Image 1 (cartoon, rainbow, N blue to C red):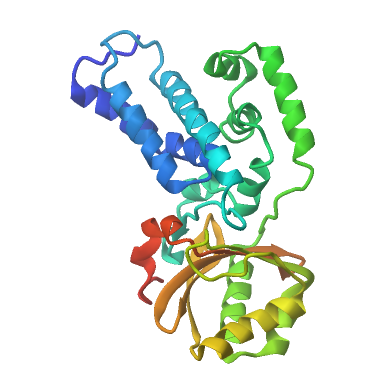
Image 2: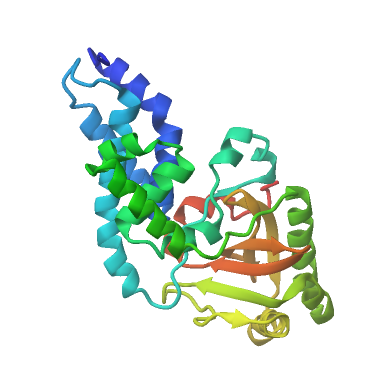
Amino acid sequence: MTALADPETALAAFAGERARLRALAYRLLGSVAEAEDTLQDAWLRWSAVAPGSVGSAPAFLTTLVTRLALDRLRSARVARERYYGLWLPEPEVAGWADGTDEVADAESVPIAMLLLLERLAPDQRAVFVLREAMDLDYAEIAQTLGKSAEACRQILRRARARLAEPAATISDPDAGRRLADAFAEASVRRDYAAIVALLSDDAQWLSDGGGMVRTAVNPLFGADRIARFLMGVQRKRGVGFGFVPVRVNGGPGLLTELGGSFRSVLAFDIAGGRIRRIYQIANPQKLEHVAGFGDTGVQ
């Protein structure tokens, strides 16, 4: 049994698992704020657990966080169906100087994968994340979700079938950063040809403003249309873009300024040495946790 004889012991046990539990909650919810709220709820329940009543703190906390996150996810799905425009996950942003932590890199999940996970029903998402990301065996997943191991195997097979499109990956982070930097420079120069050259022919621009700020409500398809959109925004508003290079969910990204005001986070999918997809998260409610990165001091 895991002894929880005093608050300090309970806190130490929770703190030791916090990074893993946060990664679990974020994968299940696609929201930094919701993941943090889930951990807060989990801590309140964990701190009230009777001393000596827990066989394994990691297993207990995994079950607790998973079930709390599933409750939030089921409620969130209804809200997301009514969301204005395209819904994108909340980004996890870090400076490039913070990117030397191999553990943090391993826990990062690309925006593309989080969007794929949105295709899954809550139970499917939980089984997939627990198996593929958290590396639990079927017996552990079954205990966590209160299902049989065979049922979890079937759920995972259905989940994999729905995730037909592989998420984009970047084998060379430095190459991804160079592409993002070149994109920023070309956009500031309003260099149409340079922007088009950096984008794949079937490139996509996906924006999430949540109806709170002006963005491209519908996806933009094709290098030509994306380049013209970027140039048109600056021309129509009479102000220029500014960019700060950052890591977004472990990959290349940019903080964007328009007329000197922090506006959005851009994340990039790279394929074949060109930019395949650009995600613009501009909903202010999804950027509260990254507002501190809004100055040009981020390295």
